[in-house]
Image (cartoon, rainbow, N blue to C red; front, side):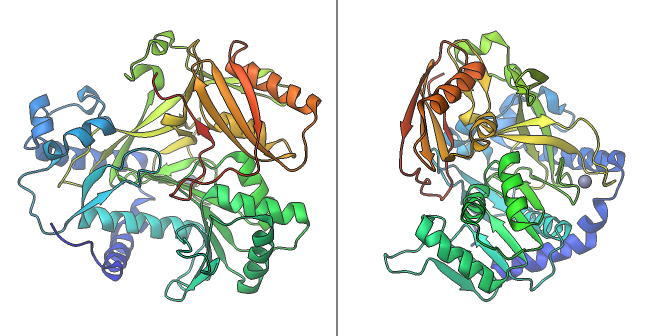
Length: 451
Ligand SMILES: [Zn+2]
């Protein structure tokens, strides 16, 4: 097993891959991209035929992707050795793991080629947002003050990045964050959408002038349309969102059109599979009424659409192939191609983690992003967290900007009942703050585990 490649080495390989291939391949036709994926898939299936887990399933070069069963994280965790390719050279292979912020971490193997692809995708994404090497960046992630007296922000001169702690976003500190942000005048902002949203919302509520960067790049959490609206209005610049998981099987991100998400298809295949078609156990899955009711402004059902799981196949990693791997997130298909003209396939939107999908006792499916729409349009609610305590009971923790009246709480309860169902008991808990997980991410929905 090799050591992780040095960051400069990764940059060099990533830039080479971007410049030599991925800058051009994004403009190939959808058919050409599909043909390239098919070629890479055949090679992967050939490799998989020697990997114990896939060999036992009878997977070979002529297998059809749709015939291979969906692979769950738990299976990989329990049988890690079964997924290693015994013929892959040990050099250029690195062990990595998921953050385990909401569960046990998962170990897996990555290759240098895979790392180069990731770097090249990032470079491409940043170019879509207009980034040029050397631009100043403000980051709302990755920095944890280790000791009590450590500074709340820290400048990394190599990357021209000013990191703000996302663990200390109190009103008093946020005022200082805004001052520091304005002094640094970043051209780009990157980080967790929830943290950048809190920063922007605070500045707007306090009437503070904020420096306008060229763009905001969000990742690692679901970006709701409300978060996007507040950030874009306050910072007066576009938000570009990136979707990916630690396992790096496949990723997707927004181009300058900022509507649909382009799948980075040169190194991965993304399938959207209806929730009800996938096995998760639990009697409620029998109901098949996995219909998400999007409501119009008048609160009448306007659009109905099915919730899909994101299932990924990594085409580059031959040291530990992950085929039809459940990436743990929910999405909607795109209604039409992206007008930018790139041939990279698109998905319509990200609905949040499937572990955060609330399934009620009646078998109703409520994706996490649905709650954002409800709470974030309420000006009096700074933060919220929905905890499903039993199949038919939720506790909603609220951080209000001022005391909520009984009429406001009753109105909220009615709206919650409308999409959870009347039989679900709703309790409110008013709290001072909702702390982020050790990873820095805020969990807005915690679904009842055994279902
Ligand atoms: Zn596009």
